[in-house]
Amino acid sequence: MEISPITSDDITQIISLTMEHLTRGDYVADMMSQSAQSGNYFGFKVEEDGEMKGFLTYKRGIEFTLPHPEMLEEISSRFPEKEVFTGDSFYVDSSLRRRGIGRELMRLSRDRMLQQGGRYFLEEMWVYPDGKIPAKSPTDNFGETVYERLVPGFYRELHRYGMCCPVCGEDCRCGAFVRVLELKGDSE
Image (tube, rainbow, N blue to C red; front, side, top):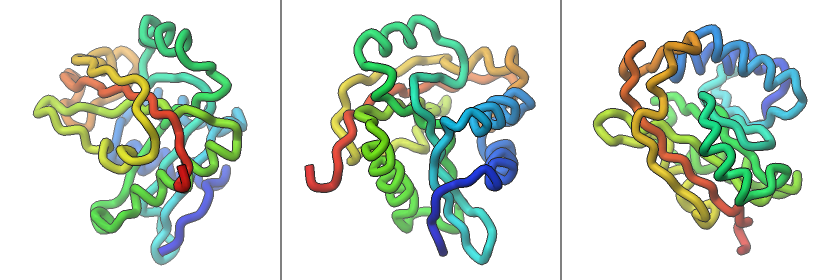
C-alpha cells in the first residue's frame, strides 16, 4: 500500500470513485473537474497493487457542496478565507478501513495545508437520517474546533443540482455537520 499526493492524472479516477461511493450526478463531475483545473485542488491518495483505494481532497477557500449563503457569510466573517482550506471528498475502500488510513490521509493533508499557509480546515460532513456521521472520526484530533453547526436538511436540494444522495436517493433527508478546525501540527 502506498500513499502519495494526487496529480492531475488522478482526477478521472477520483471522480469515478466519488460517483460510485459518495455523491452521484453530472454536477459532481463538473465541479470536481473545474476544481482540479483551477490549480486549487490538493490531496492524497491511497493505492494498493496499482489501484486507487482511497483519497482525501481539499481546496483553498470556503466552499460548500450546495449554496448556503448565510453560512458562507457567517464563516467568512469569522475566518480569513485565504487561511481556510475546505475538505472536498474523502473515501477509503472498505477493505482498508479501521487501519488508520483515514487518519494518515488527514495528517498528511493537514501538514500540507499548514505548509501552504492554512490555519483552518472547514469540513462539511454528511449526517445520515439515522444520525451517523461517517467521516467524523479521522479529523477529530487534528485541531481545535473553533466553529460547529449541525444543519438538518442541508442536502435536501441535491436533486436541483443534478445530484443523487447515496443514502436517500433523489429525496435526500441528510443533514450536515459543519465544523471549522484550527489546524495544529503534531508537536503543538
